[in-house]
Length: 331
View 1 (tube, rainbow, N blue to C red):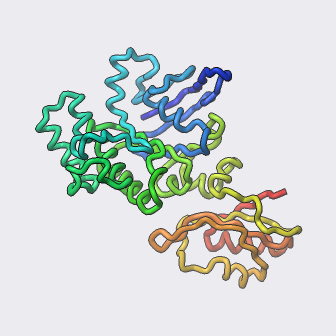
View 2 (tube, helix red, strand yellow; view 1 turned 90 degrees about the vertical axis):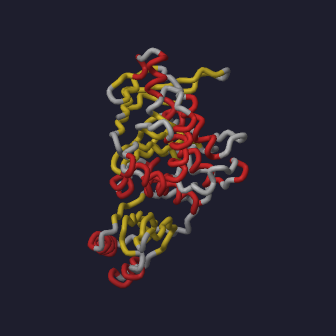
View 3 (cartoon, helix red, strand yellow; view 1 turned 90 degrees about the horizontal axis):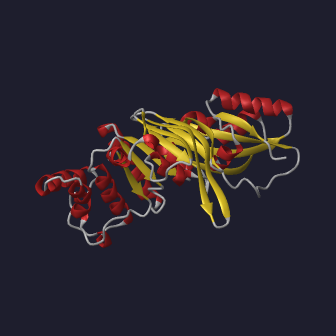
């Protein structure tokens, strides 16, 4: 669907050159939900803007359905861009138009007759759960409702790809979950390929099939979300999964382990059972877990005394109950 071949992007500023992307190789399959995650300044937004050539790469090639976008004349590129829609963090709605008018706008630009445009816009607003707000103006809508209008507008031209650039960053956690559920539903019903740009690992965990981790303009890790979640290979990914590890109350002669929960029953007292079964003193350094439908998802850091026999016992027990565990280095 979308493929990057050695894509680099350099900005020339008064202070010198800024290398935003460096020889990115990436392959996004049709129909998937693909996450691109990284901290602020990692190059995520530049990467997504290169996907539809709103930013033209300094070098390398961008392919869409095996068509090299970087080689197309501008008129043909505009036609291809109609297949790639985008939603933004700040919604970008037209304040002087109501919800219906905002969704109609791209259809009007495309020359769709007014009646047909209104009928399609009404259906799209119903799809995103706003059938009762079609005549509300942006100032009368909540943040989540504004983003629903933006999603409906992005779908108006029947795109093959939906680019979501930090689309939930301005929303509260409950609204974020509702918007991500909506995007997942759209992916399943319409088959639209969705690319999610975010700095939040929880967003990736909730919605994405695959993920690429970006740092300093490079892709440091890519793969299935579950594989990345359970066995992060780079320090960058580990920090995104479980940030702020500095400052924990630790003593000498302790071993530190990261536990990954990917669907165990949230009612199971894992740590209490671990203490009883392994007769080991466990110090919980921190946790970032949540209950989703009675299942536990997230990460936890624990420290146990540096006793080889007890360490082996703890590892074996956690493996037996299906909790993925890797040792962390805090030296």
